[in-house]
Length: 368
Image 1 (tube, rainbow, N blue to C red):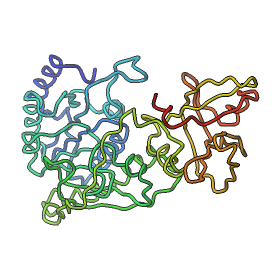
Image 2 (tube, rainbow, N blue to C red; image 1 turned 90 degrees about the vertical axis):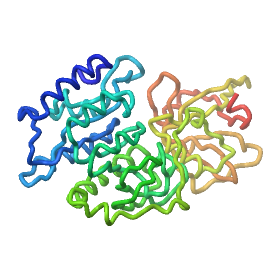
Image 3 (cartoon, rainbow, N blue to C red; image 1 turned 135 degrees about the vertical axis):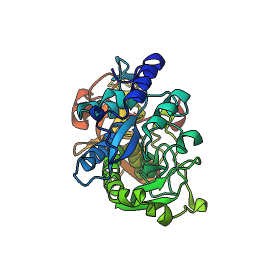
Image 4 (tube, rainbow, N blue to C red; image 1 turned 60 degrees about the horizontal axis):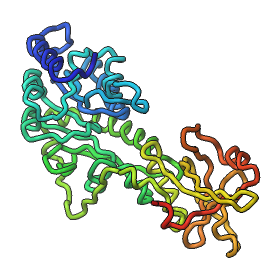
C-alpha cells in the first residue's frame, strides 16, 4: 500500500537502496534519473507528460521516483487514501516501492534514499512542502518548479485563486529553478494566457499545468545540458506579489461589494473553500429566518433597475437569482447549494420557496 508511515517507509527505503541498480525497476544507467514531487490531481498531468516523453526511443531521462504527501482522509474524511498523484502513478504501472511519502522533505531517512537514487534533476508541481537546502543540494542539475503564475507575480500557495480573485485578464505559467526563498528562483521560461471571465479556478489551474508540462518537456534538453542555467533570468523582486493560502473564513460574500468583485471571488474559490452567503427568508406572515447557502455559479448582471424601496430584495429574473450589490450593480446567481444537499439551479431553488421572499442581510450580520 502506498504511503505507510515511518516503519514501513524505512523498510521500503532499505529495499530501494539495495535495488536501485536492478533492471526490474526500469532504472537504466543510460538515462538521467529524474524525481517528480507533487500531490494534487494537477501533478498527475505533469507525471503523464514525463512518462510519455521518457518512453520515446531517444529520451534523455526516466522518472526514477515520485515524492508526494502522505495518505490523508479524503472524501469528507471517510477513508485514508493516497494522494491523487500516487493513485495516478500506480494506475500507470509505477512501482509503489518508488513512491515516497515523507511527512517533511528534510527527513534524514528520506534524504538518504533520495541520494541512493542519484537523481540528476528534481521537478516540483504543486508539492505543497518546503524543500530545505539539504534536499536542494542533492540533484546536481537542481530542482525546477512549475508555478501557475507569471513570476514574480503571485508567489505562494494559491496563485491561480488569488489572481482570479483580483480579476486579472492575463496570467500564465512559469518554469523556474527552486531556491530557498519562496518562488524566487531564476526563470527558465514562461507562457502567458488570456483569462476568460467565466472560467473557474480549478479549470484554469488544469490548463496552466497542462501548458506548464509542455513547457517543461520542451526545456528539459537545455536543463540537462546546462544551458538553461545560463539563460535563466533572475526575477525582479521589487515587482513580486504574494498569493497566500486561502482560509475558510474568506468564503463569506458581502453584497455591499460590487458584483464583479463577488463574481471573481466565486470563480476563484470554486471547489475549496467555496463561497457562502447568509440571506433572509420572509414567509407570508412576515416571519423571518436566516438561511445559509453556497453560491456555486454566477455572472455579473449588465442591466439592473432596482427601486430604492426594494434595494434589499433578492428577485428571480430569467433563470437567475438577482442580488443587488454595491454601487448599483447586481449579481446573477445561477446555481446554489443548501447545507447537506446537492447543487441545484436557481430556478429549482426559487420554486422550492413556494412564494416566500428573499432579502439581503446587513453586512454586520453576515459574520455573526
